[in-house]
Amino acid sequence: MLETTATPRRFARDRHPSRAFPVLGAVGVLGAVAAAWSGAVWEVAYLGSIGDPDRGYLLEAAGVAATTAAILLVSLLALRVLRAPAWLYLAPLAAAGHLVHVTVRTRAEAFGVPRRRFSSGTMDSGVFDAFMPHVWPLLVVAIAAAAVLVHGVVPGPRRRADRFGAARSGGARRAVLGAAVVLAAANGAVTWWGLLYFIWYRGDPADYQAALTAVLTTTAVLVGGGVAARSLGGGRTTDVLVVMGVLGQLVLAAVSLDGATAPADPDASGDFELLFSVQTPLLVPGSYPLLLVIVVAVVRAVLRGRSHPTPRRPQDP
Image (cartoon, rainbow, N blue to C red; front, side, top):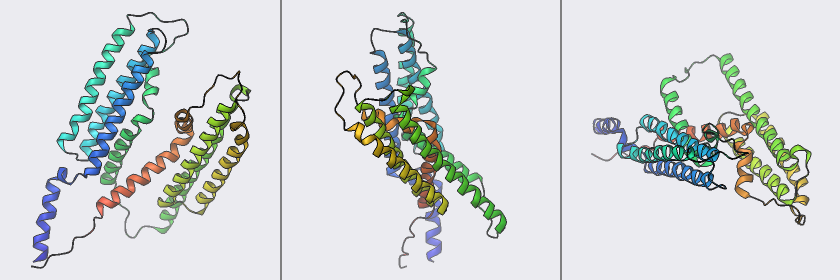
């Protein structure tokens, strides 16, 4: 009797997947769309305000707006895969439409002003500027949709899998996770050197502070990546690599501490920028694999939570 009353309810939820879309997910999507749109608008305004009106900067601003509009339109496919309710499509559509208008207006304005002597900006150069942290939440939505597709298309492992094949897949997984950790640790060292000794020039206190912040950011990525790697099947070797990477970053931080706390040079014109210092190690490609590991672990945890809901207590007839 209990089974006949519970089964139609389950099927009813399957027929209306939009009702099962979590409220927290809708808030996250709206926040991601707002972050991408506002970040693009801010970049366009900033590039348009540099010096006198310049064709290169305005074309770069148009490239930022066009690229962000394209990302917003791609997010519509992600929402389709995630079975989002219809009203949630309005936010990325409205944001993309506004940015298309900004692109057309800014590009027309660019060809009405001259190009300065040292200006070399184009719409292509604005593509890279568009992939700044303000669009990362929207990219996470796209990665989640891709994970859902893979989860639905690729069949799960057989219950009686070959032990040798399972061992080989586990070894390959640990090798990939270890390589991601090593690349992230090396990325922190490269970023530290680039901020402090770029073209063999010893930096001022602001550069030391930027280098110190960069290695601390890399340390946080390594710790988060270590936790994510452990949840994805990373073994003791991966844990050792994470510890070694963190110790290496702490050594670089200790080396930079004296320079970061030294008195400022009156002839130095550089100022410490916290956001730039945090973004730099995240934007250098060496950190991408471990960041992807973290995203995959988070998406996997969310999918497991949704696929294994807490069973309801059966009601008495």
